Amino acid sequence: MTAGNNGGAMPPDNDDDPFGYLYRPDGQSSGQAASPSRGPASYHNVRPVGERTFGGQQGYRPQPDARYAAPEAQVGAPAPAPAGPRRAAPEPPRRNGLLIGAIAVVLAVVAGVGAAILFSSGGEEETAGGDPTPAPTATEDEENAEGSEGDDDENEPEEPEALPTAGPADVELSGGAAIESELPGASTEDGSYIAILGRQDATITWTFELPEGGSYELFTEYATVSDGQTMSFSVNGTPRDDAIDTRDYGGTGDWESSWYDTYNYVDLTEGTNTIQLTCGDSCDIAIQRLSIRERG
Image (cartoon, rainbow, N blue to C red; front, side):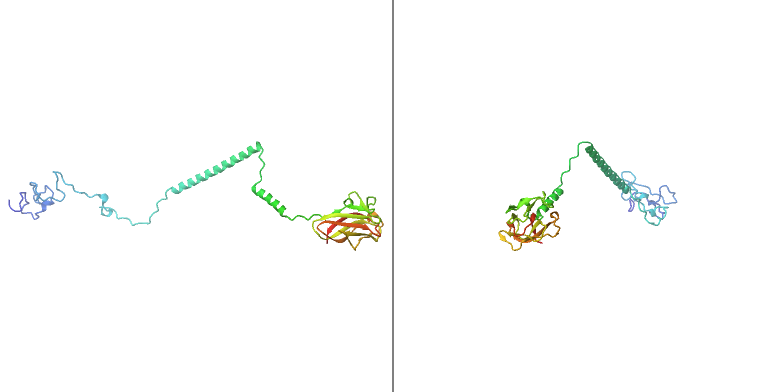
């Protein structure tokens, strides 16, 4: 064996392409490059790429897959259209579902409120037709209001005690003074009065209580049918210089229409006080009431 010959058939000498057998198909005419005869397997045998066998089987030759080829690389594939404006994908039906859920919740609330009103109205009807409704009790606010009213009443200043007044039965009589009722026009309940009627030394003694001392007015209600009639008096044992002037202001001479009143200023003390009236020179009068009044 010479160098360069591994025992296999070589292509003809007249073949211009010594390696033509590598890519010519089997069975070509002699005018073409003949396929080399295959001799015993050797690592020197040259085979086309992808035709190597393993265990007598044809080797795997990868085939192009149109699915993985770029669109522009496929034969006859149309040119890609220019990209236009993107169309928004249709909104999923989620919003409609939320709206339906909200409507269902509102209907459930309305149904609950209606049921509550129905049951409450039924309870009121049963109360009206059955046992009488218990009387409402006073609330805390009302009790507080009542309490505050009571407190206001307690805080209000007390009214001053009424000043003393004396009728014929409330005084002590002496020296011929007497209770009578023959003269008309007296304003006492029974028409009575204290008759002095010119009786010398006729005396009226009145004792009373005062809550506070001070200067007051002593009012004398009397009747007379002539002027110049007077009564002397004393306060707490002290004689006064000014007599009680009992004049006839009307001058009618009629006892029924001749009832008047007059007053004198007096200083009184807190507690017990005593005033005494006595007939002097001329005292043809009748006295129906004595009273103490605030000084005006």
